[in-house]
Image 1 (cartoon, rainbow, N blue to C red):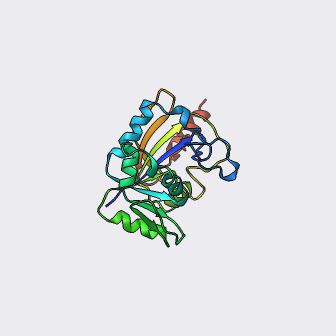
Image 2 (cartoon, rainbow, N blue to C red):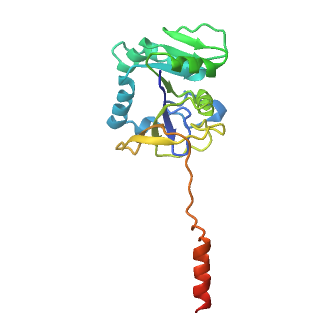
Image 3 (cartoon, one colour):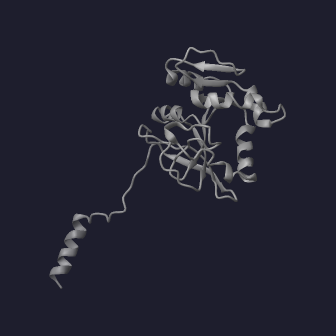
Length: 221
């Protein structure tokens, strides 16, 4: 069985859009592209290195795939992330019949949910997402995510593409690890933990016997 791992950058108000540069994704008039760059330090880099240190295949939405395909194949061969991304299989959710030029790309056409369920049932490395906000909404809605590796940046961005949408299925999570970089980025790993549990802070209703005792004490003054 493969794990499906979501790797995500998000602002405190949950925006994921265009952390890496002004031209990355200006969809909807988004004006804050590159918001993640000023917060990168050694601690964030080490967290990312650990994320890519274990065997993985990439799972990407079409938009993120195009951004990555325009960048990583053109990086120096000794760049560790470029080397890893070029080598692994890239599964890309798409409705297009176009050919994909980046080496080791496998398009997922048709019913992407069923395709991912089949992939998860196979033996192989984990499926790791990066970006891919629209694809993430499908993953949350169909409860396909096994682990969330979330970097939360200390800023508010307002309108923009968000990590969690209205279709997110309720799900309990367990915090596995957490650390904070010198720039204030909270780096957390969560795993799924069953259904959402609820409780109440309201005072418990007294039993019939307790209520009768209280009434008797009130009468007796």
